[in-house]
Length: 282
Image 1: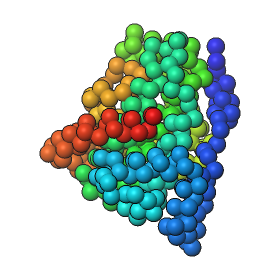
Image 2: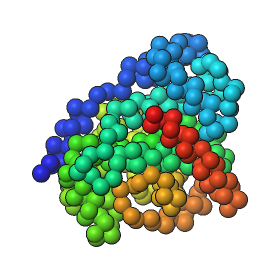
Image 3: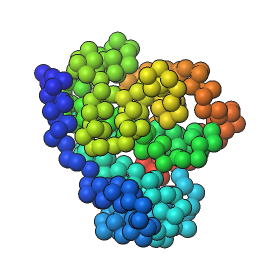
Image 4: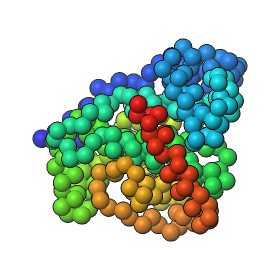
């Protein structure tokens, strides 16, 4: 039986994020860096360049056919968003998409859920008037990264965890604490520290189920919490249990999204979901 300590040790064995992410982080911290400097870093990796251009022209950003260079992608979408897209692609690429025989569901369905949460988070933030949107999509992508680690390195135990959650009709995180002795939120926070992700994203990973930070409202965490519930309601991907909880009404009030806006968010999510899944999981 794998222990919580064993799982934390597995985190330390994970590879770091690729050098392109580190180089971008350093360049963006330098006030002398130009768009061309940042574009050159991205273009040093052909695979990243191709995916960035495809994502920039996807329905998620509404710029179809307008982005034919990395520099244009940076100009229209922003360097921080581009860096986060590269992080998301890199993180997904670290893990095999092959289904394990011991598991009753696939890791692809887990990623589909996370991609849906990322899309909905970004759409909710935009609908609520948030200007700086760059952290919302990536936060949704990585909010359940702890579950991915369990799937990859503790598949037998996680299968038992999933069975416990279904049979007892409890949230997967409760089953994780019962069977594994550690939740995906806690192990996910350890992973985010390993990868030196921003504190705001680390907090999302740790607190996305409660939707607040130290019992205080937090726009990003609250939005991802709502997006998580919405993705489950829409049955986009699989969140590893059958529980769909109604989020705290105060969270809905805090993001100031009207019923009409929410309807538009759902319609756009359905419209762009399959394309985004295909681009990120291909």
